[in-house]
Length: 362
Image (cartoon, rainbow, N blue to C red; front, top):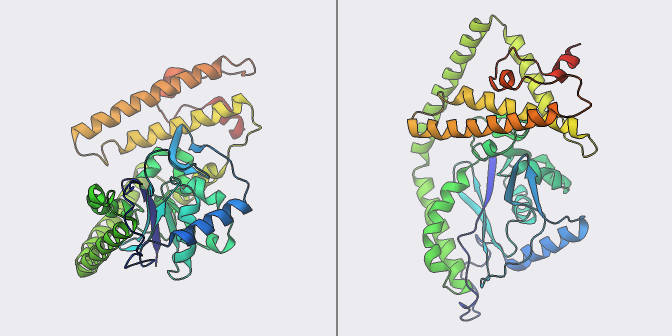
């Protein structure tokens, strides 16, 4: 199996008042993992690790699913949602109940269970950049981290290059967002399952999962055929784009490979807590300029509608305003011997050389 995608679904909560009888589920442990096994695993992980509270961040973004620990919700609910794992074809593999929000231990349980049977190469998550350093169970690190392609746009530029699915060798055209499609189907039943008993809810979700998988398998030959055609066409388009770029810039294939290597090395540089505010500003300015250039380059290549482009332009304007603020902060630092031309930097011209880039060149 090439990839496993994992994500949570907070719509599948269940009210505490829907207690009913204590009869066991007809499909106990078939799709939704037994709560006792999950709870024991979570307790084991928390006892072995130094837990920090609060949410992790990636650049300016703070993610709800990005945390090591969480208290049980004060709302009048029992199960708070589902954590679901699917393959890259959208076939449901396994799930578990949330009782403490989307903590790292839940996807780790699914990864451990599926690693023994699926032999997957990539493990796709919305917050892979924060989850993978947390992972300390050595057998699980044999999988490769894969930051979902769509969610990677909300992360920093370095994060997208280092962890993003489009940068992973061997991932092909895998998106890592397949679980979103499954969640949209399962969420249809959330209006009724939240009032069911525990066993009835588990049976209903399992039956829906079986129905979904049956439909997926029945249509898999059509899906794979269409995907093959699209992937072949896209591969040829990218080859043509590369040839056009080589002719336009008068470069060789070795030059492009060297550029890719340099970008990966740039993305691999991590932020250290002991650095000065000047170095932090330099890094943040670099990240914003990189994001602006990438978004501007993709504005017409990846967006066909005017409405979408208008929304992207507003985001570009917000980033430019943020860039101006950071440059102003940098220019007011006493230790800075050279200032940055704000308008030149915001023009995103390739000819603009930042002060610290000039020092690196020499």
